Image: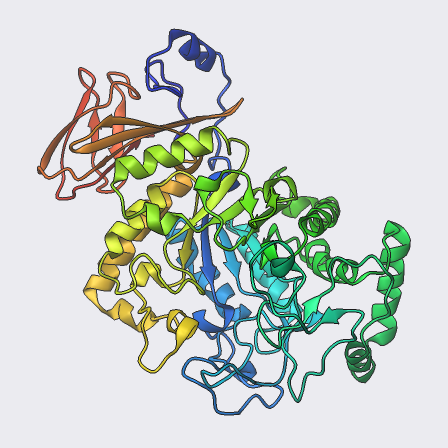
Amino acid sequence: MRYLLLLLAGMTVFFGCKSEKKQDQMASKEIGSLEEPPFEWKAANIYFLLTDRFNNGNPENDVNFDRTEETGVLRDFKGGDIKGITEKIKDGYFTELGVNAIWFTPVVEQIHGVVDEGTGNTYAYHGYWAKDWTTLDPNFGTREELAELVEEAHKRGIRVLLDVVINHTGPVTAKDPAWDEDWVRLDPTCTYQDYESTVSCTLVDNLPDIKTESDGPVDLPMPLLKKWQEEGRYDQEIEELDRFFAVNGYPMAPRFYIIKWLTDYVRELGVDGFRVDTAKHTEAYVWQELYREASIAFQEWKTNNPDKVLDDKGFYMVGEVYNYGISTGRMFSYGDKEVDFYDHGFESLINFDFKHDATRGYDTLFTKYDSLLQKELYDKSVLNYLSSHDDGSPFDRKRKKTYETATKLLLSPGASQIYYGDELARPLQVEGAVGDANLRSFMNWEDLEKEETRALLEHWQKLGQFRKNHPAIGAGKHTTLKKQPFVFSRTYETDTYADAVIVVLMAKKAVKTIDVSSVFSDGTLVKDAYSGITAEVTDGEVRMETPFEILLLEKSL
């Protein structure tokens, strides 16, 4: 068994000191012989990709709804789809990368027309311009293909996050009329000066804002009714809505329609969580309502599919509260009002601070995150990233620090978000592209023919698998053991499981002698998961000769 399940009298716990009382408590635990370490969302290694830009599994669905107008560079559909993601799941790409959760951009049906944003025509390839939440966009695939994706991911212990939007519909175009005024507002445009000008407004011009604050009953919007009638789905959809509102007693207000439509994917397919888009632009109580209904739906799926259940964890939600950073703690400020999104259904928030914190040294970075996550955010977490689909100033725009990116992201406390292509140095600057389009090129699979790209991928794979195999990395207690070379331990424990590792960085010498007495006792066989070398602990030390500056030390089993 390759994974670390250990009970060590010499384990350093919490404050890095040898505590006899703590060791006695650990010694009394019954440690199971688990095939896999327990999954922890707080330590997850999440892979984020644009559905349309990752892998084209079915070229026959590349063009739909006559989406053939000329667009700006990288502003049209490129062919990536759900089937393409599933192919890579089956091929073991994510498993080899140590990924244990996948998040991909929304796959519900998008607006059919183009929008001119001043950068050339743009289609809704990114998935954030919904036209109909009840069905998938054929450019992305079918509901059956989405079901297969979830099932194949679950077979490999990989969780699936759907990216969801409640804040807005897609823009109005010649092919996509605006929804009724009791559903959406078309003005004012947000100015982001305070709470009101961030929430009760349209994010940008021509992006209809759902009236999520309304509790008044509304009829279905006429464009959607007409669409369902033309597709022959009207009676079925109305019957399901009537049943939902009768069972739950909610007012037939706009947000509850969308909550019903989104949680259907949980109830029917067993998706494990939501990544929530534009969270700060919607009233926080809406997310609590979504979380409540999604949790009920997830439990129903588990009850109906007992042979497919991965564990006893509940439904998971991570929020995009734009510009939230870990330094803020639990509260996000609008200027005139503060909101605790963690208290409204979110277990984690995307951490916009990380790209700035990562410019600092390892000790400063890791110590800061350990302090915040072990105290103020102890029962919550953050999702760290260094590049993303809409962050115009990534940590390494020119891809000059690709190894450092991997090391800092995958060894930091908190959950990690790999953005598709980080591991292959996919370019983040594209000739002719404007704005976010630079960040959204098609996955550079062809670069795997290059030796340097394969070497980089191997670095990401080793670190990713180590993170996946050891929840101590993301969820454990950090202790700095030495400054040069930089040596630290991470320890993690639950009522039934204990995990401890030591990591060495910037070790220049070929022969490395490391004091491991705080974690590993004499006589223990220790493995470096980076080089594959093993050594026995003698007089509190291990001695290894490797060509690398990094050691990932775990108990060899």
